[in-house]
Image 1 (cartoon, rainbow, N blue to C red):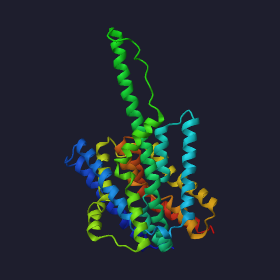
Image 2 (tube, one colour; image 1 turned 45 degrees about the vertical axis):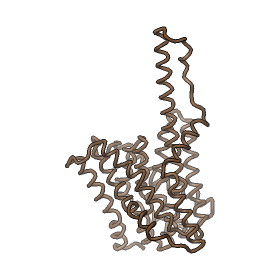
Image 3 (cartoon, one colour; image 1 turned 180 degrees about the vertical axis):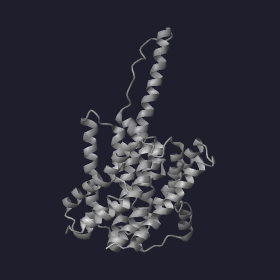
Image 4 (cartoon, rainbow, N blue to C red; image 1 turned 60 degrees about the vertical axis):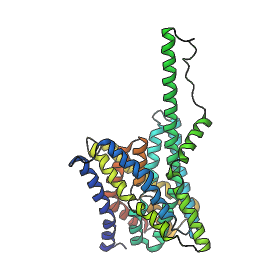
Length: 355
C-alpha cells in the first residue's frame, strides 16, 4: 500500500521539473533574457545534444539479458493497436489527419517513465516495478521515439520537397504567361516514395536521436556479456551533458509557454482530448496487449499503470523542433504531470482487485 512517505518521494521527483519550467517561463515573460530566436536555439540544443546523451547514458546501464520479453511484447502490441487505429482514422475518416495522427500517437503512447515512473513504481511494486518501467523506457527510446522521429522527418521532407516543386512550377508558369518559355513546365511533379525515403534516411543519419539508444544498448550488451565497465573518462563525458537533459527540456518548455498568448495555449477542449488519450486510451491499449500475451499478477498491473504515466518531455521537444502541435504536447506534459499522481493512485487501487 502507498503511504504518505511514498507520495512525498514522487512529489520530490516532480517539483524540480516545475522549477526548471518556471525559470524558463520567467526568463522570457518577466525578465526578457531570451528572444524568440534564442528560445529556438535552446530547443535545438536540447534536441540534438542533451537528450541524445541522456538516452545513451540510461540505456548503457541496463541488462538486456534480464528483460521481460512478454512484457515488451505486450507493450509492442499496444502500440501497434494504436498505430492501426490512427492509420484507419487518417485514411478512412473525412476528419482524419496525418498530423493529428502523429500527435495522437505521442499523446497515447509516450510516457515520462524515468522521472515520475521510477519513484512511483518503487513505492507501488518495489524493484519489480522499477525494472519493468526502465525496460519500457528503453524500448520507447529505441523503437517508438525513433519511429516518431521517422514520421516527423517524413512529413517535413515531403512538405519541403512539394513546396520547392510548387515554387519552381509556379515560376515556370509565370514565365509562360509572359511568353519567355515554351509553356510545358506548369505541371507539378510529385516526388516518388523511394526518393522521399532516401531524403528522410539521410536526414535521420545526421540526427543523433535516431541512433543514440542503439549505441547505448550495444554497449549494454557488450558490458553485460563480457563484464566490462565503462571507462570513467567516457562516462564523465556523457554525464556532463546528459544530467542536464530533463532540466533543459523543461526549461525549453517554459520558454515556449512564455511566448504563447495564454498558458493553456491549445484551449480547454484539446487539453481534455490530450488527457483522455494519455490516461484512458493508452492504458486501455496496454490492457489489450497484456491480455493478448497472458500477463498476470503484478506484471499486469505494472504494465497498465506505466502506460498511464505522464506525457514524455521528449515528445514536446520533437514537436517543437518539427513544428507540429507543440502547444498541445506542452499542455499535456505540464498539466498531465500535475494530475497524474491521483490518477495513478486510482489505477493502483482498482487494479488491486485484478489477479
